[in-house]
Amino acid sequence: MVHQEIQHQHNQNVFDDMKEKTVVSWTVLLESVVSGQTIMIVGYVENCWFTREAFKLLDEMLFNLGLGLNNMTVSSLLSACTQSGDLLMGRWLHVYVLKMTEKEIDIMVGTSLIDMYAKCGRINIAFHIFKKVTNKNIVAWNAMLGGLAMHGRGNLVLDIFPQMVKEVKPDDVTFTYVLTLCSHLGLIDQGRHYFYSLESSYGINPLMKHYACMLDLLGQAGELDEAETLIRAIPVVPNKVVLGSLLGPCSVQKKVELRKRLMQEPIQIYPLNTEYHILLSN
Image (cartoon, rainbow, N blue to C red; front, side, top):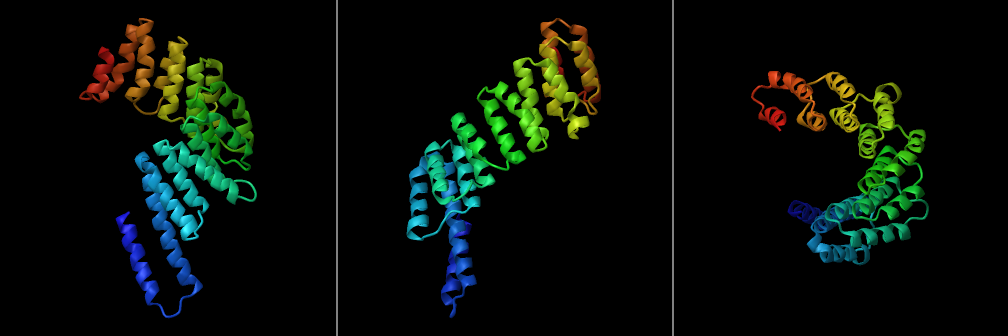
C-alpha cells in the first residue's frame, strides 16, 4: 500500500511538471489514482474492522474524484468482501453494479457475486444471480456448485450437473464437488459412474483427491474389496488422506488384515514417515 502511494506521488509530480498535458498523460495519472485507491479499499475490506474507512475511500473515489469502478476493481472488492465476510459492502457493490450495468452483468463480476453471497450465507441470492448470468464459464459453474455443496444442497448440485455438461466442460474441481457429494449422500452407483468416466468421457486424469472421494464412498458402502482394488490402481503411493478414507471403514468392519495390507507398501517405501505408522496403529 505504501509502495502504491509513493508510485502515485511520483506520477503526480511528473504530471505537474508537464507543460502540455495530453489525453494519454491524464489517463496514466487517473489509472494511478484508481489503482492506489482500489488497493487501499481492498485492504480495508479484507480487514472487517475497517468497513467504514473502505466506504469513505469509495465515496472519495466515486463522488469527489469522479472515478468509476471497472469490472476488475469490482471483482477485487467482492473478493475482499468474501474473505472478510463483509455482506454489507458486498450488497453495496451489487447495487452499484446493477445501477451501472445497462445490459447483463459481466461474467467475472457475476461469478464474484455468486461466490460472495454463497460464502456469506446467502445461497438463495447466489443461485438467483447464477440463473441470471448468461454465457456461464467453468469458473461460474464451479463457484455455484461449491456454494450449493457448502450449504448442503447436494441433490440440487447433481440435478443441475447435466445442464452444466451441456454448456461447459467440467474440470477436476467440478468432480471433486460431485464425488464428495456422492459420498456424503451415499450414492454409490452415481459415484462409480462419474469416477470411472473421468478419463473416457471428460479427458480428466483422476487426481489423489478424486481417489480419496471414491474410496470414502466405497468404504462407507462396505465395498472394501473394490476399494482395495482401486487403491492398488493408484499410480503413486497413496497419501494419508487417501489411506485414512479407507482405514476407518476397515476398523469398523474389523478388517484387520486388509488394514495391514494397505499400509504395508507405504511403510516399506517410507519407513521413517511417522504418519503412516500412526495410521496403522489407530
